[in-house]
Image (cartoon, rainbow, N blue to C red; front, side):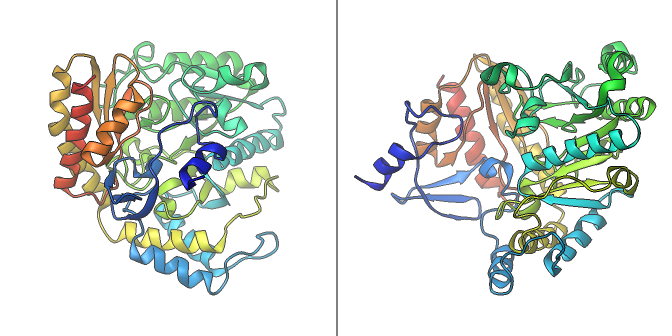
Length: 422
């Protein structure tokens, strides 16, 4: 049996049925923006390998940091012990955060960082004398991960609620923020979506521990971009009703939207912030949940402790990634990518079957009227040398910020080729 036949017989890939094997591309190397297949073909990684590889694959400083740390201290438990890589990384993160966000809990992945945030919010409310505040609220159109609690906070229609029936805890959902990022803001709560939030808080606020949202960009739940004004109003309502505000910046952090962090666009600081993906430049898995001294004091001993929490290898790589991030204005680069995406994808608006076109930072989205045929997309990937993976009706690109203009043109050309061929 060949390697690929053996792989297909035994390996279960994400979001696929075992009885329906999918077409696979075997990747043997990755460098910069390029993936190399076993037959020698190369494809631009226009997905940043699920949005994590912000600065390209295998940047030399990150690889060297990994090698150096592996020779000294690959791993040590984090209970009762510490190490220099986590101290260095924490210095980087505290310096990058708005004032007040300086208490950091490390975990394995973005989804787990959301679980940690939920625990923080719950313990804080209970210890503040609010034992009934154990529910959570969020906006439709969101996605917060595949672990159990995070999954329950994702959109009930585009998420996974129907797959698990009543086993998945019901949460409080309000409508997706209605005003797009680039539309004029309305102070009318009935139009901007905040009246619905206030009604929810007045009705059920005594049971709600926190409201969680992806600031500005709702990612895998539909790639919607909402107005910063929604976050400002949400902050005010959470303050008024004593509800914690959690920002999930796992996908939007580290310049993806054209700002260092999406929350800066609104000028809003959450009570709890979740980071992951580009935190290590996509080289290792690591996440951080960051909160304030006040909230941390309310929590006391946080009842969570991943085996590989603050792994020295991951922390060393993340520090190197932070150095790389701070060494160049990547947010300006993301804004330049946005301009090019908007110009080169504009012809999609005239293509039959295209419902909408959206660009923000290093994110380009073509929304279709119907789900895209994955096999058709894969065929264009092979022909054009651009790796894209559609999400239902969405054909989107989130390329590494290191992509050059001529390489980005290959991505936009492939996207237009796919939409024209449907």
